Image 1 (cartoon, rainbow, N blue to C red):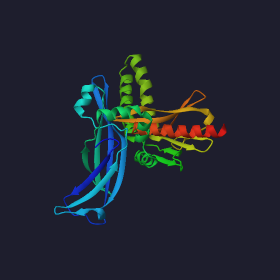
Image 2: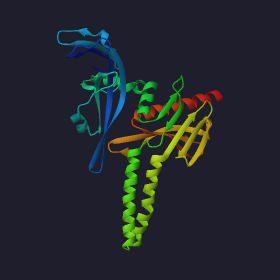
Image 3: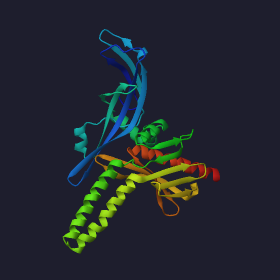
Image 4: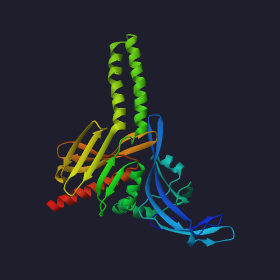
Length: 318
């Protein structure tokens, strides 16, 4: 198999499938990124491209030993090929790509994961590198995939018929594990501060612990209670932030007030990196629109969709 080609074959089961059973096949191209900080390393996995196909057992062919179910998937051109792990460490790139096929019952259940060998020839690789615009278009997730990925991150999202974002709701508690960790750690830090005060520690220690203790607790509470709602209409972008039921503030921006949209990584929890989409305004401020995204390609695609909204509205006004 190769990018730009076709995955075609049969899924073979060692039992006879009932005619009404539905099988879900999910083809994944994943990017594994290894980041090195000093002597420690961490590896995160992101879905670079995916395709889900539903198969009906009524189309299966019965055999002596079970059932064979046909499968055919077109693989877009421009996607990276699978790279052996040893080769990635030799190049020192810190990044490798893997392909796999997940097969599971459509109504839920544990998936069987099958690694796939997806390679390209040297000539095909040169052709793919020369067509960078098609490469970006090929790996960009569809609107349905964006909705599914963001809902898995506990976000409410809506898009219009053209695929432009109209609503994002980032609920409180989406980083609950990080928030709870900060509260526990901050409480222990406060306890150390009280011990230092009781034992008459030097003032430098009292000042450091006295400032950092409430700061850590405050960040933990912010992480657990912060709620953001972003509404996008034809001529306005509205951001409503709130801290629980106690305090909220609203910001409104017209397309002419937006310089551009960017995406970056601003948080790490274990081996998971989180990405965000931000808006750069003409007032010299950068506003976060959505955070807690688990794939860089998802954040990049959302930033591009926002740019399409801004460019479209600017074009209409011109």
